[in-house]
Length: 380
Image (cartoon, rainbow, N blue to C red; front, side, top):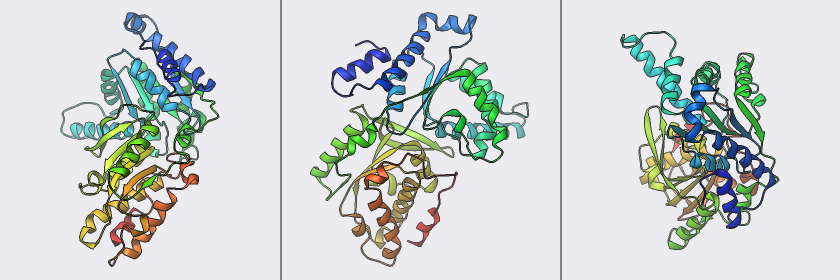
């Protein structure tokens, strides 16, 4: 099979994995043109003699296949210096590198008061092609540096391909001092083609319509149902180990594909993870699978605290949850002094199984960097 995005897309349709979709086909055709422009035979000459080709910014409603199409492009790209990253994770890394630069400046190890240029130079040196999933701006700390950061990246010849639920003109809408952010929007539109994925079908919701999302009790039958649901949600894509960085620490995702992450309960709640780690996961993945949630008790207080923090993070960011458990949510913490407090978590878990919840967009309920209600877990 050809390695070009269009050929891969057509092969998926012929195999029955995807259904014909005119909106997706239009986007793939444009991605295929960019793929041709970036082929090795002419890529080095492009950067020596001509401006870098325009990138692509794909926006549209949730579940229309934006990330899937970008992944087809990314997997096809032969440019060795390429990177695909969730936009929030990328900005976390940017801020960490800025902090590191300032620490080096205090020690006299570097020169220059503005860290943006050297940080952008480091990114452009490692990646000429940057693919961003879920491009959105809600944090004033991000908004304040994006213009200078991307001006430096574009000047270095970096090509940007991105997906977003918002058109560029709606980024950071209602944000503090938004007028200072507007030049970034103009810069972005000058360097990328803005494409609307006009598809009538929410494929993400369609893949789970009519199927259960909470499987009990724990056992081989539940494992098989979870395996089948994971395959549906990822379109059969190969899952692989992944990780995100939270405040300089690596959080491991045992299996991830197409914006879907899968964990064992012990991966998330026996490990020493905190609310910030769960927030990072919730911002990065639109769907999370958790296998083997046990019935909890006061003897497992620490695991219960982490579980409550985890569910708060997923709920606030409207992450879709599929799980196998020993019992239904109200029976997961049946006794002990904190059983009453756990009712809020049980209520959220039940709401998260509803069709209305699954129809909400990822991150649609989160307005800022902090999680509402995370501290409640300390009552357990």
